[in-house]
Image 1 (spheres, helix red, strand yellow):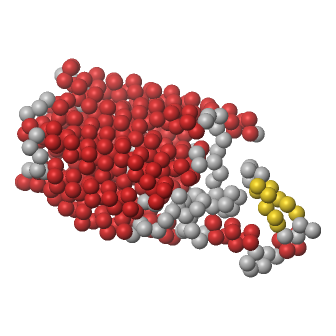
Image 2: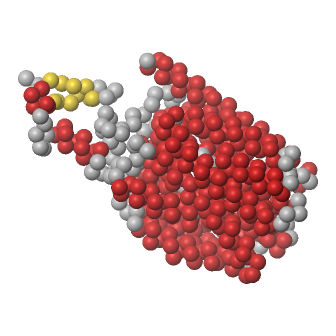
Image 3: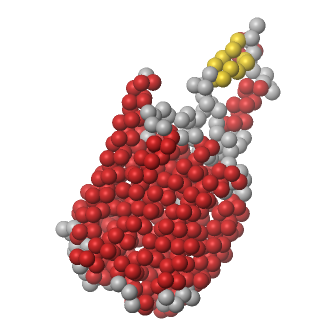
Length: 440
């Protein structure tokens, strides 16, 4: 006689040998071999997975310069091309738009052909972009290169990289995702500290050309180390597996809600990240002090991202994101009354500790509530929304400054957008709890 067991929620029949055989499974038993191979041999939670995470973090730290270099050179570009603050912020906006589109395009590509080939092409695009940007003769040329080459090229080291690493982990997926995302913040620590010293002696054009050479020389070999394809998900019920959680929203509705949330949080987030250097110049503290604050902000963001990963593995991505969003709103509020040099250092530290884990939590939420086979595209769309938010917010803050002559109104604008993010997360949490209660 043979018994029929039902596998998972899908009610797929699996034929199992008689009880005596199951008690002492022999070598080569189909059920044992399948569970073992899916859980271990593809590399999920393996030593290679952790090695791949380390390479991914290094790659993101180098390639992440594409998001931060334009922030550091913003005052120099404004002075050289003779434009106002809003126009000087346009190259950053173009960078973020290209970055956003690239996250979706590269994300779709890795779902189909794997990570390394799209990433290799993007890295060549990034390095070439920096070399060409150093030769531009107008703010329009500079803006186009930032958007079409540097922005698109940088995209491979964020959303697509996060989606790729999420396939390699089950038990510590939150930690892995946030650690990979932390590479972009490590870039925000290192590059804004190094660039001013090169710019002081050689100018921003030389600094850009040097960055292009570094990216081409280091990123291409690192990407070639990531040629192994992503493993299959662990069998449901096997150690460390994570089933998709129920929620009373269609995939399309959930995607829209995450897009709205990502847009709101990142319009708010962009205010200090994009304008802290210019803000310090306006207050008389200089570019170097502003770059120091940006680096402190990013260093604190690394700590925040890693801590958020541990927290998400325990309480879930939605709750973790909601905590970060509330703390970010409070931090933005602190920037308004505290504008002394020491105070700005402290507030920048608090801001970094508050907001660092927010964006990676969107990838965790996607993996919690959506199919793994759609991870690259789904994560890419949400990341695109966050980057569009950064792009809009960076330009909007400069525009508000030009209108009012002060950044106070820009901080208030950021807080208002942050409240939109909080509302979206509260709705998502409520829907998830309703579904969990119905399943119980």
